[in-house]
Image 1 (cartoon, rainbow, N blue to C red):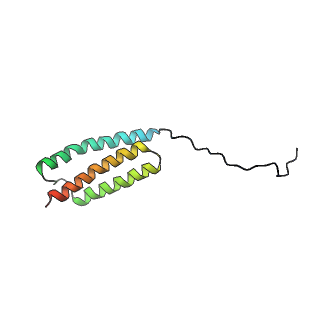
Image 2: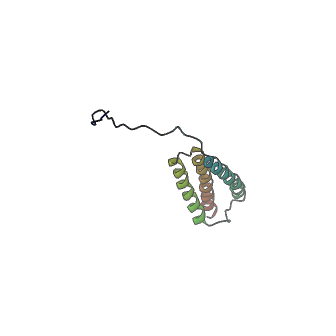
Image 3: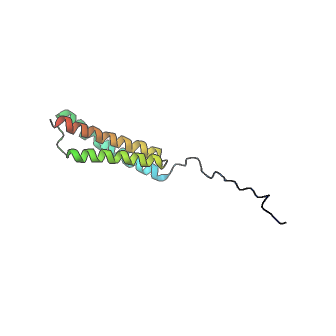
Amino acid sequence: MVCDGEDLFIFSVDITLPHMWQWQDFVLTFINFGFMVTAIPAVLRNYKMKEAKSQSLSMYLATAILLSVMAYVFYTLDMPLSCISTAGTGIMWYILTYQKVIYSK
């Protein structure tokens, strides 16, 4: 059988798969929830003592911003659990930054 090109159809096949949970998503989520849990005592201590002396303001702010960027990266990689947990960790660092600003007056 000779094919002259008229019988050929070029088409694209959607080969994307539905979201499959990646093991990395679970590991990163577990780690970030660990970071959030360890930040809770610092937030509570700062609130109770009305002071935040442990780190510099630039360190708090840089960490919060970088965690926000990481959350966005995880979002673009279709890793929703990592995105949410990293955003939560970032929020904890924004709270620490806020406490540093308020209590340093």
